[in-house]
Length: 118
Ligand SMILES: [Zn+2]
Image (cartoon, rainbow, N blue to C red; front, side):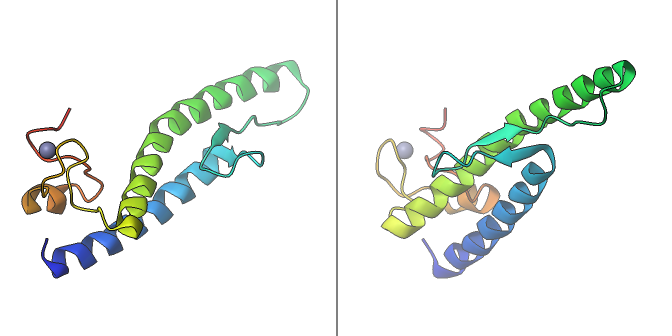
C-alpha cells in the first residue's frame, strides 16, 4: 500500500474514532467492568413524575437505537487500529492479499478485499 494512503487512512480513522466516541458519549456510558469498548445506553432520569417517566423511556429507546448503530462502527475502527499496530493493515482478513487501494480510500476500516467483502 502506498505510504500516503496509509498515513491518510490512519488520520481518518483517528478522526472517526474521536467522532464516534463523542456521539456514543451522548447516548451511552462506557461499561466500567470491561476493558474493550462496551457501551450501555444511558437511562435518563428526568423525574419520578409519571409523564416524565414515559419521556424517559422514549429517550432510552432513542439512546438504545443510536448506541446499537454506533458501537459496531467504533468496533470496526478499533479493529483497524489493531491491524495497524500488528502490521496487517491493508491485507485481506480472508485471503491475506492486499486490499485494493481504491477500496481502502473509500473505506479506511475495510478488512477484506472487494472479492471477499461479505
Ligand atoms: Zn480477499
